[in-house]
Length: 325
Image (cartoon, rainbow, N blue to C red; front, side, top):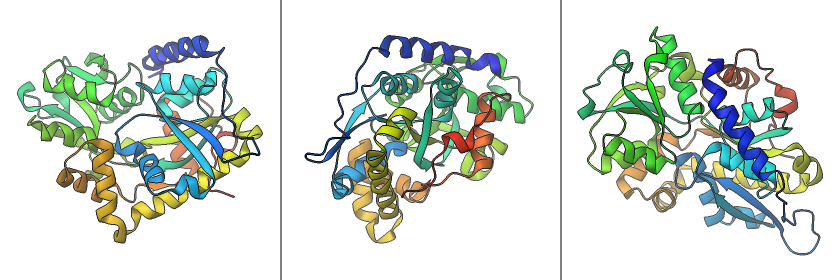
C-alpha cells in the first residue's frame, strides 16, 4: 500500500513548494467588522454541502463570520493552497491530509466530519458486474494515489483481489470523473452519491459492485471517513477565534440539515449546490442527512490513517479537534 501513495506524496510536495511563497490576506484577527476566512472546497458535492447551507441560512453571519469559498480541482491542490496561505480552512480527506502531515506540515483536523455513503460502480457497457472482474480494467480516480484509490485497493485486498492489476487513471474533479465513465474512458470508479445520481440522470447505466451502506465494502466501509476540514497549526493557534466561529457555524448547520422539519428547504439547497434535479437531490438528502458530526472517534481516525500507511503515527490527540468551545 505504501507504494500506492507515492504519486500523491509527490503531488502534495510539488504543490506545497509552488505555493510556499503565498500570503494569507485573511483579516481573521482584525477587530473592525466581521471576521473573514477563506475556505478551500470542492464545488457541488454532498461532502461540502454544509458550506452551502451555512451560507444560505446565514449560520456564518450569525457568528460574525464572513466566509468566502474558494473552489479547487483536487485534494492536493486545495490543501496546498491553504499551506501556501491563500486559504485558511479547507475541505479534504485523510488520503491527502495524512501524507501532507507526513511531509512535515503541522495540521489540525476539524469537523464537520463526514461519514457518507460511497459506492464502487462499473458501467453497464463495461460488462463488469463483480469486484473480481476489475483487474485489467480502467478505474477512474480524481488523483492517482488519492483517498479513492486507497479506498478501492483496501476493499479489493479484503476480498482477496489483486488491486495491482487494476489500471487507475486520474480524471480530476467529480464532474470530469463522471464524464470519463459516461464516455467510456473508464470502466469503473468509486463515487459519492452526487456523482452517482448525476450519471444516472445522464442515462448512464451503472452496476453497484460494493456499497458502504450495505456493508459490502468490508471494514473499510465501516470505518470510512469521506470528508473532514483542516487548517494549519499556525492559523489554529493565531486565529483560534475564527476557527471557533467556523466550528459553531458548522454545528448549527449539521443540526439544521438533520432536522426533518427542514427537509424540503434542505433538499432545495442541495439541488442548487449540486445541480441535481429535485427528485435525485431528495434521495441524496435522505441518505446523507445525518452523516456529519463535529466529533471523530479515535479508533475511526486511526483506521483511516492506517489505510494511508500502516506505519504512520495517527497523532490523534495532536491533530484531531472534537467539538466547539
